[in-house]
Amino acid sequence: MSDFVLVALVAAVAVLFVMAVTTLIADLVSRVAVVDIAWGLGFVVVALVAAVYGGTRADTDVRRWLVLLLVAVWGGRLAWHIRKRAVGHGEDPRYEKVLGGTLDRVGLMVAVRKVFAVQGVAMWFISLPVVMAAAHTTRWWPVVWVGVVVWAVGVVFEAVGDAQLTAYRAIPKGQKPPVMQTGLWRFTRHPNYFGDACVWWGLWIVGGLASGPVPAVVSVLAPVAMTYFLLFATGAKLLEQTMMKRPGYPEYAARTSMFFPLPPRRA
Image (tube, rainbow, N blue to C red):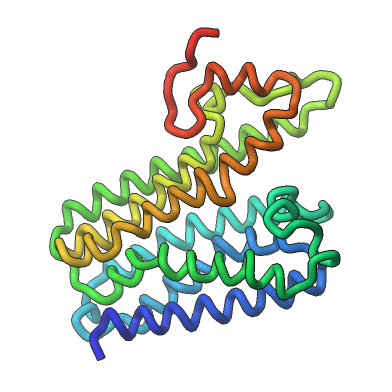
């Protein structure tokens, strides 16, 4: 069995375990949105088992442990941030829209089919650069450091954007503007989603591109898929359907880039 197949299978088992536990927790608390916490932590679990079960050709390659560190920093921060905002709140409107109602109303199997299974497959597929880093030795170390820089840009956008939004939400209702549009939010309506995409393009550069042409081509659809999810599936586009109903948001959207940071357009 090749190193890639072994690590990919181990990663699949890890994802299955994470999603099974997440499904049980969701059933207990009657909230599908707990999958958002498991999303970041699941990648950390995948990176850990990939590093441990990396094949013989990668036994002396420290890159898989570097990838584990990068994924752990990103996934741990994301899970902690989402946990803080999710505890004590109701179901996320995005998931109610996907499910066609609350979990209690539609049933657990609908949630498994429409959310947990989909996100589990997506998690395994998006983790392919992590698998590549564990299954192959590093071919181009300078490329690794380029990827680390892209990853760092993404983490900064995510962390700073989330911190700015948290500070905005803490302002008393009568004193804060109707729409968050300062800091990074002046240049992009979703700095956290943009940062998330940068993180996974950076990890692809580190784990896929730096492994050589074939691993790069095999795994390049992973960051493409992550970017698609952030933009169109469960991310920006779905959230904007709700946000456009808020006073002032359509005007903010008319002058602010939705995803890639750009100078604000004139009204």
